[in-house]
Amino acid sequence: MKQEFNAQNENEQVFIEKIVSTKRVAKVVKGGKNFSFSAIVVIGDKAGQVGVGKGKANEIVDAITKAKDKANQNLFRVPLVNGTIPHEILGRFGASRVLLKPARPGTGIIAGGTARAILEAVGIENILCKSLGSNTSANVVKAVVDGLKNLRTIGDVARLRGKSIAELTGREEE
Image (cartoon, rainbow, N blue to C red; front, side):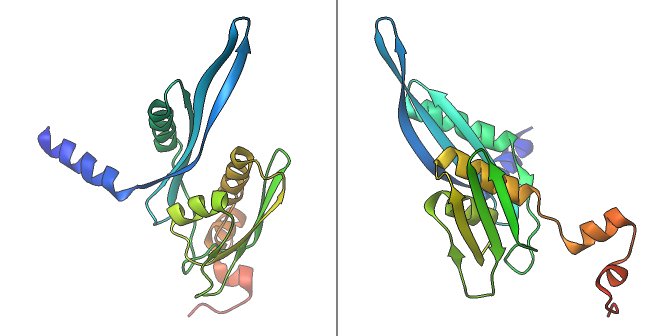
């Protein structure tokens, strides 16, 4: 039983955590305003696995803890090709749209703060990212996640179509 505990701790230390945003929110009630805190947290292993969570509580620490737990539950895998994404994609959520474009080695992560946190946690080294439309941090995060979830490698597309990669690209396999 102790060995499982150690393995779990090693697994948890692999993930990096980034707080994307924290804010104080108010609910107006008959007696005045009730204040609470909202937090968005991203966790990732820098090897293609990432999760995003949102938490809300009366204390900031509790909100961050809830967000981390939700991010752990919402982990998903992102296909990476040579430190970037396999193809260009537009992620959408609400009025936010985020354009993600693969970049050449040495470019780095060119993205705004909200999108940058997610892309760094995934482990992407070279990417171009442009936020279009609304720049609300919660919506931008969800738009980036939508774009990353819809990425496919050429192997995935070939498998879905029931063809080989050579048939799909028109090149000979080496």
